[in-house]
Image 1 (cartoon, rainbow, N blue to C red):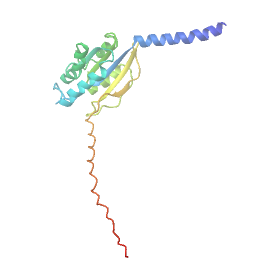
Image 2: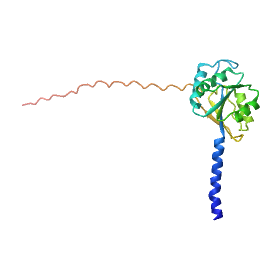
Image 3: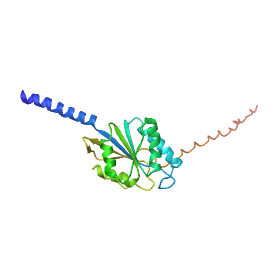
Image 4: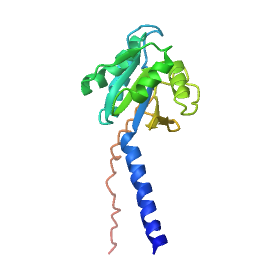
Length: 197
C-alpha cells in the first residue's frame, strides 16, 4: 500500500514541479537588426522597415515585457520600434560590448518574455554567455533568423533557431495562361445522294 501511494504521488509531484518551472521561466527572442542602408547608425531600408513590421506581427502576442537593443545601432532601434510601440514598451539601449550586462538584464530584468535586437556578433556572444549552445554563423544577407532561448531558474535551455520572415520577396506566382477560345467548327457537310428511277 505504501509503495502504491508513492507511485501515485511521486509523478504528481514531478508534474507540479515542471508546471511551476514553466510558469516561472521566460523566453528570450534574439533577432538581428533589419536591413539598413549602411552598417553603422543608418536607417532601415524599405525591406528593413517591412521586416520590422513582420517582427511586430510575429511577437505581438508572445508575452513580451522587455525589449533591449544594441545602443550604438539606429537599425536595431528601428527594428524594435513597431513592436515596442504596439506593446507600449520603451526599448532599453545597452552597449553591445557589455555582453554580461545584456545577459544579466535578459535573465533578471523583468517578468515576462524579452526581445534583444543586435548585430550578428553580439547575438552570438549573448547566446554563448547564456550557455545556450552555439549557433551557425549568420550570413551577411541572413536577416530572417530568430533565436529562442528559454530561461528557467536562471538557467538557459539550448538555443532554437527559427525563421520569422523570408529573406527575400517570394517569387510571384506565374499568371495563368489565357484560355484560347475554341476553334470555330466547320459546319457538317452532308452528301446528297440522288436516287435513280
